[in-house]
Length: 137
Image 1 (cartoon, rainbow, N blue to C red):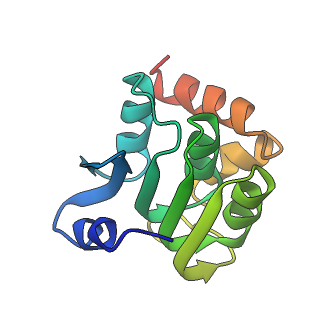
Image 2: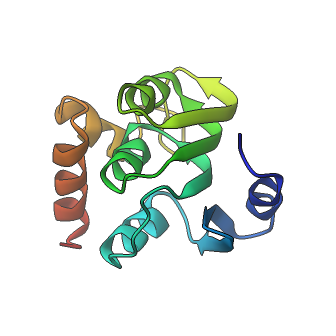
């Protein structure tokens, strides 16, 4: 079950995601997937963390899988991300389940989701490709 305090933190202005490790709460600021990528690159041990994120597609789900988080809540979550997380044994909850995560003008699939698709939704390949695209290895 998702922690109510995480949901409250997620509603705050400029918060992209919130997570809990043990009894400590943390927030991520920024847009799109970048805050999650920066957290991944910081090498913080997130095993068994509980996450609440505003948008969860396969790209974000791949990072959650690689980081071994315990539970992911997506205010908006794509069905493919839901399936991917469940297949990897991560507890999942969501506010709204959608077919896909689209780009900002809603004209096509989000570019990070395209990377996940081209990586055959392999979490490790997706993370490597996104890090390479963002030059954050």
